[in-house]
Length: 142
Ligand SMILES: [Zn+2]
View 1 (tube, rainbow, N blue to C red):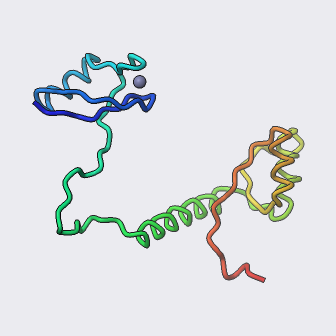
View 2 (cartoon, rainbow, N blue to C red):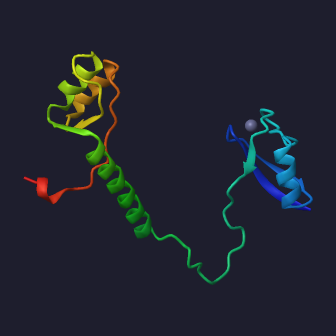
């Protein structure tokens, strides 16, 4: 018998005992496992922190600096995607976003600079804006 920590699509965690991992997979596939809290059958194994600690450090241990690098890599990918696919409108962002929202300009994806106040005004008007993670760009520094 094997015990799994399970989680449903509503993020309810519970334990289940199974004959083995194949038995578990089969029962999930047949929707035989239901969450005890919400009866959801969309069940998966919860990620568990290692319960056994050895004196040897795992080589896969993620150090804080690696995490920062991964975040920066992700941010620069997002930025690269936006820069190559979106229309840059500079500090006209708020005006242009509003014109697109009200149908006065061509519907397209734009990016540019907006102050926090401008962004808040846009959100209040129902214009969808999202902050873009920007890595510092030395060429644009004043
Ligand atoms: Zn549930």
